[in-house]
Image 1 (tube, helix red, strand yellow):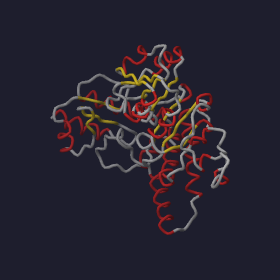
Image 2 (cartoon, one colour):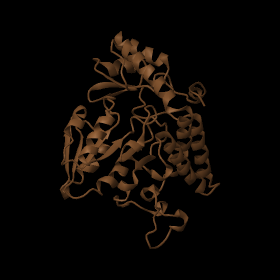
Image 3 (tube, helix red, strand yellow):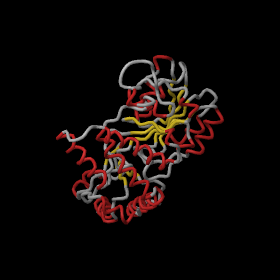
Image 4 (spheres, helix red, strand yellow):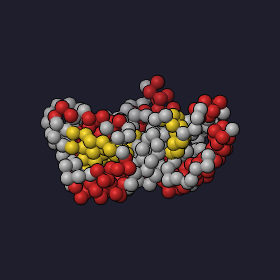
Length: 345
């Protein structure tokens, strides 16, 4: 499927420039969810078909980020998945993170302070230089939520490796428009409801096997079992040997919508989406007299921006006191031009 075929599968109201808050579903995702809800309402089927959507989604996600399916865990939210990592680091460990990091990849580490874990923060641009021999974990977003700043992941990862620290990357604001090689990091966590166009309530964690062996599966239930259908009752503990041991039992309907959404993104290809999104973002930047950038998220300081856009029927966001506009595969050049006209009038 190419971009021209995929774009008509979306029906946004004109002026949606807020994918960084939530993405819009393609028709296959919307229709699958409506069908499942109708089945649920009338009790027509058992739940196993809905549960199978988790496996489809996992496979599509693994394809998107270049890893084996066996390295992908399924959960509900970024903080829930990061929490398992944070609870498993040694007492007294030191975590380094950007000061402006979205709190889903910050609060779980801070919550471990009662056992001597130290969280040190610096500006995102200084992260690599701040890694030292005392650093055990470097936790950062591949793309910052508030500003759209794209991390120099190679530089940060090289510094972490040299120090013997693990890297825990939140790719929620990247995966779906920016090519992501999850194998480059020790752990990658992604919420799917933004650039991956899925219902809220599905998320993924990619871990290297050597790191995974150190993670306590503290939220394990029947779905994390070696055979989930043979894990309903009683001891002993019998978890999956691969990343499924860290799975959370799926919220069925979130995954019913997630599977076809991820399959569409994988079929279109992130490279094509990346080119489209950046062209729109740069059109917006140019209209405001700004140079080209490297992100599908644009943060600008324009007086009265929120009111101006609202009056023109444009939906964007304000983060950290600045306008945040975000551009994805269903965004049109008309959406961009209307936003520019509203901001420059």
